[in-house]
Length: 523
Image (cartoon, rainbow, N blue to C red):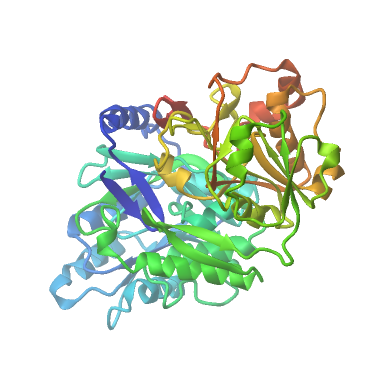
């Protein structure tokens, strides 16, 4: 399997014939959606300081990067270039100075030595005068409307932290699209698992609080560390569902292989671990066994261990009961009727299921115990080891509800690695769902008028209305012995959640639809 990788982002390129199917779709999307002709100029009072640390930058890449800034439709910007290049690459300074003479918005400083990615980036910020800082790598390219769209988010949505979608291209041709990263809106658990935010990112400079943006000791994951800290203090994080950043893949970049920065995953683990500890959360962070830039967070369980009531949905099943005997969690009971549950936590399980993961209760409980989490769901698989659902999507592709990644094989990474990590979602399947009993009762339990297959989904949406997060985890797996039919459309559910369905799911991108092999761009 080939892959390309940036700081915290895995994109699977090939699995058999899938590459052949995917590449034309990506290129067709770019041709359809990125017509940059007849763009209108935009004026505004917000000054954006684009910071770009330089080090032995390829001459052609450097010029293309600067030209992409000069081509911005929003004109109130400054480009801050701090150059740590060695003497053998003194052409970097010559090129930059040529541009400085052409446009006074470009600032250039030759550093006395190379301070590394962290030090060079901080020196760029020291040069900046803008209210907002925007991050641009020295070999990448901005879409002409990148700043204009960011300015709109700042002024219309009062955002103090903004990020967009991005696409990856094979150098030197920007039209040679490798992949497009269509992201979710802000999701804290997703960010703990990987740097899904990445590019194009802008933030209010005051969020730094007078400290350095980038920290020594986090090289390779310095952006991830920064984003974890800034989103913790930001008041309004806004995602722009547009491709505003063109990320170049070439032989020397992290875009092409993790081998160019093997220390990145170590820094990433350290960044997530410290972010959690700084919030008073006890947890162990480790790299995913198949992808070292995706992280598994193992939260410490509350003590003493609370009682969990496993509520079987439709009576006893020998297969289900037998699988429960492998459960490693000690303090649980199995009941057939909800009124018989005596546990502090309710774990609803379809009796047509077979538990695969011995520590499935621990993996769900570590999230359900958090005060900010309303419900937790697990990975639901068919007996043939294909995915039935990895969470539920609301209002994607004009479909009221659909399962995530149905049909992918067990062990597949999914779109942008999303099947590899625990994450926030709008809803999870009621076939394997955990909730604190007091929270369940506080919203009146299940809506008994709702069709059975929608009850868990409806519960999640009502919990979200109360401000709770919903978490799906791949680390709690069950087989589900069902027919595999899609959800039958429920007029009651549609009428109840009409506004949310029309708005679309914040945890999935409006530019995506679900195809045969996972998510693909919507043409």
